[in-house]
Length: 293
Length: 339
Figure 1 (tube, rainbow over the protein chains, first blue to last red):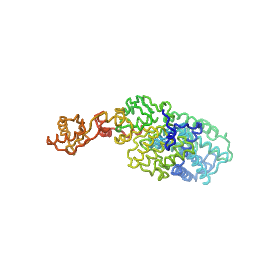
Figure 2 (cartoon, helix red, strand yellow; figure 1 turned 180 degrees about the vertical axis):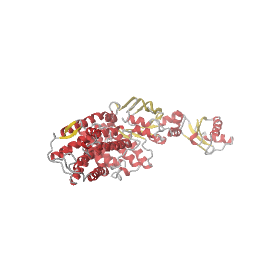
Figure 3 (cartoon, one colour; figure 1 turned 180 degrees about the horizontal axis):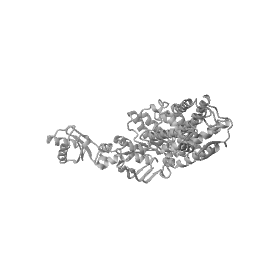
Figure 4 (cartoon, chains in turn brown, red; figure 1 turned 135 degrees about the vertical axis):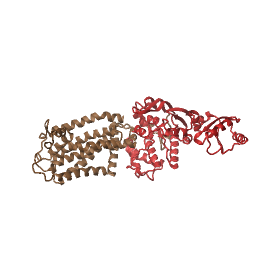
């Protein structure tokens, strides 16, 4: 290749590719690109806050209406006593995080459809995993914000507050669930043909997973087939430790779920969620790789 | 600078009818040139450019940019080039300045250089008035300019533009042409595709004409036209003639001294395109027609154009080719391929 004269290089359009590029570490490049991608998602959220607001309003309505529906249920009906509202709180908190994370794929799908993703793919990204990483950071923070709003709303409605260590468990459990669901949603966003199909999958899976969990009723209320379903539903594994963390006397090793196949404590539930979310990321990474590389 | 060898690419298969987009296409683009790719819609221009900018892998063939194999080292190639796509993808919610800042982070420009470079490009493309408005409010011309700026942020050695002037207003097109020429003068290799003959004729230093996924002619516009030789005369005996009349006239005109060949141009109301030997033959033709008592609606003489080059190679005009593919394309399938 011919080397252009210095006078040419100094002009406004200059050929930067021929000037020695400063040596920058891979980590700092990945940081720069991930930060830019994440910032863009948050700018979108701030300027179009309907996603954030709807994600809080919907569970809030659940909390108020469903709580009121069973407000006059006989005392002592639920295992461990306590009001239905208090029982429901944990379920709705988990549902909030779950629904938000299920939507993780939507911004990616729209970028694919509008061709914005191509803009990212022709850029010399150090690692295209930055695109995934930015989505995970964005959805985790968004889902946690929405869930925290619901925790506060539930507290104000008189459904109780978790203890401080309990709060850490709540955040840990929600984060694990969010990671798992985000992995699934991103994989769908890269494999389904368009946003109509993605929204259909979200729509179909959202409520059945909620009803087939212990969010609205305990296992003891369910027929045996449903209690089996609920005891393998990942939402149940998130709901039960959170419900327990609202108790004043909370221990990780306390039994929280008496499933048809055996009794589980909070620690086991959390471990199951951790394994699930790790497994899902490993399982979907070939799909993401194929689409991004 | 760019070397494409024996590229083939077929879309579809399975349920869909497979479409051969590129058919053993080879092309060399010398460094520092404004290189045009001319061809009707569906001739493989976009597929070729998408492969060149690493968005798409060919079924077979090799792609080398500045000696780097684009198929095995795509990231190195991406650093060297800027790409301005056909469908401008823009984030409506960001302002133009934010979009450029976002893009410069993807190109890892250091923070201090970033703002300086963005301001340079704002001046260059005359975007100062509206750069801080949200992209959603931009016109087609503004979007294309912001997209060009995004492609230039990292001062690439190679700029690839896919049909950059489609649907542009005259002012934006003039700005774009001027910038492309300036870039070329500064040593940047610019490759642009177009189905506008005049654009390629005016802008390009060299060009390749694509048809059905292959290169059917390659060279400088002047050489390509000169190779065809002769002058062109376009004759209409009435505004809209018919095939029968034109066929009869064709036979009569072939007997006229100085006329080498006559082609009936269906898309121009069955006008007659005459290939003639000498420059001042139109008067001879006019008197020949008067002798035969044939009216003349219009008679113009011109140098051969790139359309004549295309006509010579494929037997149809570029416009006919456009019309022929217009009904065959499946926008849904094309959209899917680009995702």
